[in-house]
Amino acid sequence: MSATCIEIDLSRIEGNARTLRERYGARGVEIAAVTKGVCGDPEVAQALVRGGIGALADSRLDNLARMRAAGVQAEYWLIRPPRPSQVERVVALADVSLNTERATLRRLAEAAQKAGRVHQVILMVESGDLREGFLPAEVARAAEDAASLPGLHLRGLGTNLVCLNGVIPTPEVMSAFSALVEEVEGRVGRRMETVSGGNSGNHGWIMSAASPGRVNPLRIGEAILLGRESTRRRAIPGLAQDAFTVVGEVIEARDKPSVPTGEVGLNALGRRPAAASVGDAMMRRAIVALGEQDVTLHGVRPRIPVEVVGICGDQLVLADRAGRLHVGDAVAFDVSYTALLRAMTSPYLAKRYLPCPPAEAPEDRVRNPLHFGAEGL
Ligand SMILES: *Cc1c(COP(=O)(O)O)cnc(C)c1O
Image (cartoon, rainbow, N blue to C red):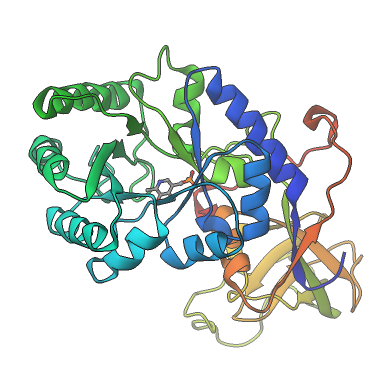
């Protein structure tokens, strides 16, 4: 364990991908693995492909470019609606893109024709979470339009829940989506090959639904990378929750009063801090060389029994009641999905890939019963 870094256990990521692929596969549903949580890290992408994943999906073109440049062989999806100014790059880097604007579709068609390619598009449908998507009443017209544009191939429809407003993909919502797909097929006059029905928030639904309806495939990031579904951030049995470990080095360890002295206003991040009072006089506090620039306050959980009490841009403060930490020690943390994204984005955290240990049955592993609350987002 070398401080300060993020350790990435590629074999656990590969194992999670394989396990989920088998479980969903038994229900007739494939996976497009979402790599935005790791900024399109090519080592992680390669581990996903080893785990049997055939499509890699990311919200940013730069991440797709990074994986392609590293030679990772997969179908590439852009899952954020394309920026109209970037359509040439979209056509060059993505085999498939998710779309919600007819003007952008027309520009994509022109760019594809100019490049001598056929670009595949999935039209996203708004199902209640109020982020991206055509309204259900608009989608048939848009699909007819997209199907008629030279340079484009209308590959299918998609929807996305849980993301902005936490709307849960219930059986009712998902059945309505499948029914809409069939209505659009009637209007366009052919079957939609790809019906991309959701993300890690659909895990509970897919494992318990009587039938996935028309959905195939799901776009899955968090459930593979961190082994958790995302409606309540519950750990998925049999998956590793600890493929990623953020490690920070202790730069100060000292007994201090447990409550601040003096008049208290807002702190460096404009927040009103909650003191971790122990009531009595002194408490050991340890400062770790990590900050909001590398992780998030609610998105890190120490793997030893110490408590996160606060964070600034570049210092993370722990309450260490048992006094176990000393200056120079390394502290390991589990991360939430948001803290993972922050850590992978931070240029200050070295990325360390663990050499693949011999395969072990996930059931035999001591697992961290992680459960981040809503704030862990
Ligand atoms: C982020 C994202 C996903 C993947 O979400 P996870 O919760 O990581 O599974 C899927 N689809 C879209 C459109 C996204 O933006």
